[in-house]
Length: 504
Image (cartoon, rainbow, N blue to C red; front, side, top):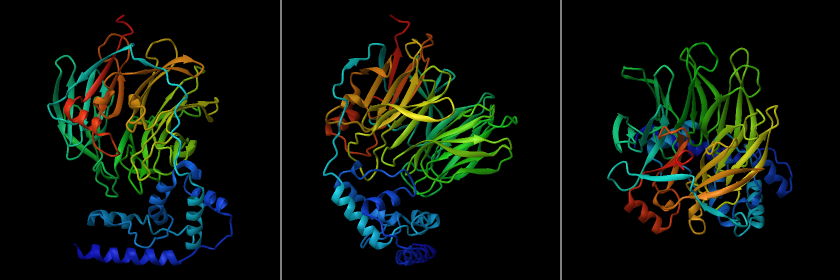
């Protein structure tokens, strides 16, 4: 162990214990009001019934550390390697301030234990009416001869399927020959890829897939017929990059969603090479470009999770700066994972369609508030939830008028489905029937993969839009043995759903 690491660890623990004895000015509140007040300091306050009692209790030591109270016997640095310890200490995440007194922390725990349910009801829609997905023809695809699938990127662009794996490989796949070819190789997994109009290619390398405070991510550019070049390094688990000429100055700006872990950010590399901080919090998942306020200047819209879950707009000002504004905020237990902006109502305004269902954390259980939400735009950029489709573990969606009947249909993937009761809901295609009525369509052999990513495109060039689903059989939540065995034995990496619209 390095000497300086030992020194900083001792300093960290000393400061932590000191902070726990520096009590804020106490204000006498009822337990209910205390819970609401303290839980709303960093995000929308959840209700106490969102988790069962045993999971609240399991989460207490880490939750206390985040509030500046170190419980006896708990060390938030336990199990970390030296590099990770140094990164956590440098972040000052656990030592910034104490937001509750020790007495208030005890009061909060007692309130939660007294009021949290023993279990939460995993309600589903009262009656599902599942139909076979006859509108699409499924095609199972094996990309290699190895069991298990670890696809970290799925992107269909310019009639080519690009995909990447956990081990740094970046590939193309030819549907006619059923052959994969290695395109590039990186040190770590590529999780986002974008082709620019001028032929340049942008690669987002996450650094480390598992949660970390180490800044190991990189952003690369490959210019047409040139070697690959590094745009930025020391990025904190970047998961998405939007590369666009946002301010119309003739140059590309790169907006990077650094999901991070305890800390993170949304940052933008400007055309002159400087880096501007747009959002100082962790959990950024993706960013899109839209003119939200219809002033002729392009704005940014981002999904953030990891505590303060929200859809945030960054409104471009005349001087080129961006002003953050919340479009929607969600409680931290929603597990926001993806969004698309579509004119769902057909009134000329972009609406929000979100997938909420990430369940890879300390509070794993089936959560009835997970699912797909449609939030409508009133025309002035104000959004209100209008529809909720309950789906345990909903993680990705693609929205499109797949049947070309002038409304938006939605395909959903659940990476954390209710395997015990509704395993077929790992993939759902919702055909829009109007007035928020949807026909629920499922596919056969849905248990052949742990479905993780989605994309869409006219893959067979027949004029309609097809759907691609990829698997990721990494274990990050409980899975029945028969599913794990099926993933290991069947070697299905992708499912192509070919749209039958013009093939009847």
